[in-house]
Length: 434
Figure (tube, rainbow, N blue to C red):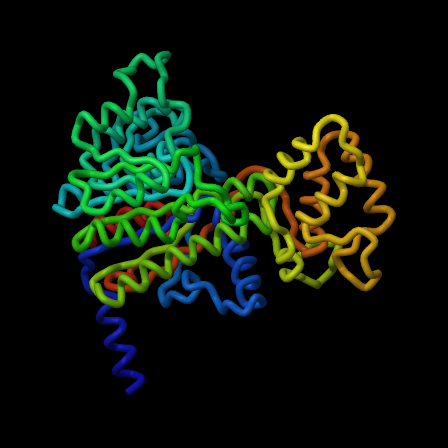
């Protein structure tokens, strides 16, 4: 019986999918997935859905110009199947246009959707619809979105391209251009709730450059990534390609903010679960999860904790350190250290004058260091390092590293995504499956 089930599973995973959902965790490599995995297990939530997928591959992430890729070159490789230089979006090193798997899906008669938690013209989503020599050409990237024949865009607003009259390609307000071309353009929670049954292609934006970090989302009614994915799947229905990016994982990695990083990754995993639920009623759906590169040089353990690793110590942090910094600044110039210290400790899950046996207690040396950082104006940064150190999370960089990503998948065609892959193989395999 077990052999028959295995054979049936392999036969299904070797078939051709009608629907393909590709999740990309920006800045998500093996360390990020495993830190979130251990946190989820200790919190009683079980293993990550993305890590439990049966087909797995180690994925090289280098660009044509560097072992350490940027998001633009990585997105181009994943989307288009060819290496390019850092900074390039949807073009090769000579600036020649490359076809993305999303465009190939559209040409094959599939519907196409792009969902992200960050700006819609950011490098990763842009790799699937734009063709520009550099990721900084934000207006031109936005214009490529307007002129695409895709069916759905959901994410943050445009970055630096709302009214860019300095661009030689300037043709007007991009939202207005999209509406004139037949797009249903909506904003915020009210606009999102009104999208049901809306005609034509849809372009929804959160109203901010990006969705708030998951750890900062309490009290904010902005639709979160799992809800956006659910809407996209319902809208695209059957016969589609959907790319979903968890973009703020990368931003938290740049900030070396461990608790914020893992919570955005957990939210991406919730979105993956939405796709897996859809797959139950649409078994011809292939679900793929990968990362474009690693950010921060995250490690599970560092010298200060020896062989110990304490993921549970990240549970008490209540906001991102980016938000903590804003809260500290809001205290004003007349703020005293004692008030700032209480605020910083509470937000970080640490205790002033705590029990000596409490691993999150702040000792005299900690308080003295915090006072110095308060006077220097970077208390939030000090708290960030204290929390990572207590948990045993190490960081080697505030930028990207050359670590490989982990690609996991399930559904028809998943067996092709196994072994040692290059990031370009993801697009090439998807194109073959189309």
